[in-house]
Length: 100
Image (cartoon, rainbow, N blue to C red; front, side, top):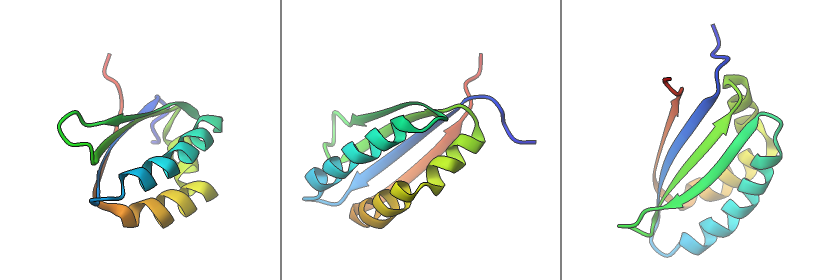
């Protein structure tokens, strides 16, 4: 059965050397578009204190279907998969549900 609880996404991106500014500029658009989604609760971008080229994204969605809608959106396909992923050395994503 599909998870109907809020789902949090933790994504760690290691950016290729020299591409941080490009990625951050694209991320501003991705963040703005994500926050407009009906199923989005929040979208926060963090930068590692020990490595400026490592970003950690913390995103919240109302349920798993909202995560799927986010990933299937045109801007996600074009900007994240099409433009940002090629600028990354490594990309790790964890979907998690808060334990109370």
